[in-house]
Amino acid sequence: MAAVTMRLPVARNVAGQSAPRDGEKHLVVPGDTITMDTGYMSGHGTYLDEEKLTASVAGAVERVNKLVCVKALKTRYNGEVGDIVVGRITEVQQKRWKVETNSRLDSVLLLSSMNLPGGELRRRSAEDELAMRDYLQEGDLISAEVQSVFSDGAVSLHTRSLKYGKLGQGVLVQVSPSLVKRQKTHFHDLPCGASVILGNNGFIWIYPTPEQRNEESRSFITSLEPVPLSDREVISRIRNCVVALVTQKLMLFDTSILFCYEASLGHQIKDILKPEVMEEIVLETRQRLLALEG
Amino acid sequence: MASVVLSEAEKVYIVHGVQEDLRVDGRGCEDYRCAEIETDVVSNTSGSARVKLGHTDILVGVKAEMGTPKLEKPDEGYLEFFVDCSANATPEFEGRGGEELGAEIANTLYRVFSTESSVDLKSLCINPREHCWVLYVDVLLLECGGNLFDAISLAVKAALFNTRIPKVRVLEVEGSKEIELSDDPYDCIRLNVDDVPCIVTLSKIGYRHVVDATLQEEACSLASLLLAVTSKGALTSVKKMGKGSLDPESIFEMMETGRRVGKSLHAALQKTLDEEESLGTSRQKVGFLG
Image (tube, chains in turn purple, orange):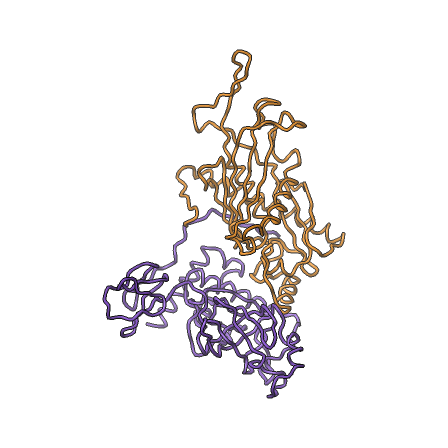
């Protein structure tokens, strides 16, 4: 039976404006003067305009001793060494792949930074170069770690561990990188029955938990077996919960996704994206998170 | 058309999901995304509407101007469509990139509205063979999130519903005809949009078809059928898009689904438009800053 819901738009307000807990945040827009004091150094997001420290991006001011920088709220991903990212291959070039990671420049994955199947350790030969497309093609999704950052800001990735590599069946959600909380681990197996990779670049990958966790956990041959319906329901629900959290500007981490999932169990999966249901679920999640902290 | 690149595994996941009637966002094969409709958003048009269907954002403005009737239809007015794919929607539309898509959508709208019964064109006539109202319908694509045709047809219907054409009288003064505009700015004629069709796009994914495909689902579908359905369930035009082929059996099935879905679409749209009308002047306009 077809279901068509239409409504009149309502002016959006982010649910539950919580009082700032860690002091007043100094929010600025490009062109705002941060301070007239000349004793400070200008960091990222600021510049010196006739002895005045001025912001060049819109965000919150952060100060570490004498360094003042502005952390932008909505920005492209700025790579840092050690970050986990989920990226999509855009080009296959000689000895390297170009990966799209929602940053200003395409990231680079060198052939030498990729694990060969079978775990061999050897120099990459010309045959390996010719067989690059057999490993990763345009459009494939990979999980990788940032190895280094070039001087122009481009990021160099590596998949030199068995937990990184080509991703199989699942759902990708693209969010703003500033909403992904930095944690010790970004690979989570949620108890509700699906797994999640929270890429620092804002790409969230939701996939069915693989049955066995053995040495060959990230082979290049992806399983194209149909995923059972129960797993699909969990994945779709988590996907909608992530979209709800992001629309209401909540930080994404495993606990917030799990609380949101539990709060949404009373509704049908497709109803989660309705504005009023979204507000209700996120409000409950916010309350549980506050209770957890307090 | 704006498109996303997907990996093989993602496409397989989507196709298997559609087989089991559970799409990526939890919808069934015949469910639409939640749509938001607002009319009268542009103040210097005769009628306007904005439709947000998921990530697809369409703005339609209707301007009524006086013109001469066409030679073959001297006692009718007519509609002119123009579609602008703005570069806001996707970088592919920069410069002249969006012209091809815009022309395709405009041609589809001409076809859909070419049936005599869709809009009462005789009511747009002022003086046979001399003066008539020409409705210039301008469609602006603000954001492309899949399922453009459906959203555009909903917005066009809503904008035509909202259109207010000033009442004019023809006076015979000393042998020549003069046109007098009414003094009251609220004295207008409204169009009857009961028979205006809406477009339902059915995309074939695997062995089943889905309604209201997102960009990811459109990347998995090789063929789709565009149906123009009226509120009573009558099909006024059919168009096949895409490079894949369609089995005649599946075309019949898709047409049945399209009629069913089309009727619910019209019912929901009319209900929302009536609700908005009943709020009258107390309605808070959300516009673009909401």
